[in-house]
Each structure stands twice: as structure tokens, then as C-alpha cells.
Length: 139
Image 1 (tube, rainbow, N blue to C red):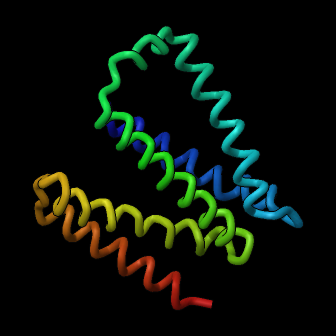
Image 2 (cartoon, rainbow, N blue to C red):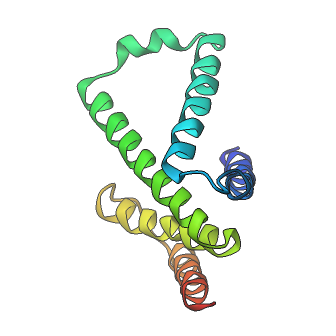
Image 3 (cartoon, rainbow, N blue to C red):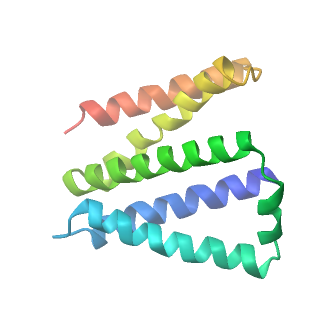
């Protein structure tokens, strides 16, 4: 089932790049990111409230809070840099380079989470890296 969610994530990430590229024309990228964040805030809290999950906030531990907050900081910084890159570059180049996050995730999941890595993961990571290098060096 996770595969379907991952594919949907990829589709919406692609739409994010296209919509953002159109939307940030002549707009400060930081302002655009702030507006985007408010929209996401409203949607996600709406889903939590309608789904009846808000009560789960009481069960969060200090570790949960720390790492969820750190994830939010990382997400915010990622979005700020992504929108700035989209403003300055082509969406068709920025988005693939942004996918180097997959390679960094593979490396960090191995080092920090001690997740297993097999040859498929290594080959896939190398292909993503190669594609990103092609995009970075292309004009």
C-alpha cells in the first residue's frame, strides 16, 4: 500500500513544481512559501480534526515532539530553498536535482536508522545521482 502513497506523493510533488513556478512569477519566494505553508496548515489540521485524530496529541512523548519539530524545521528550510531555486531556474531542472534528497535519505537512513541497503537501493541511488549531475551541469 505504501507504494501507492509514494506514487501519489511523486505526482503531487510534480504538480507542486509546476504550480509554484507559475505562482512565484514576480513574487518573493519567501512570501510564496509562507502562503503555501498556511494552506498546508489548514488542510492538514482539517484532516486531523475531521478524522478525529487531534486527541492523539496527548500521547506524544518529548522525543516525538523534538523530532517532529526538527522535521518541520527541515521541511520549512527545504521549501524555502526549493522555491528560491524554482524562481531562479527551470522547473524541469530544479525538481530532478531536488530529488537528490532520495540519495541523502538513503545515506542517512543507513547511518542513523541502521536500515538495510541492498544492491537495488545502491544502483537506484547511483542512477538518481547521475541524473542529478547531468541536470546540474546542463544548460
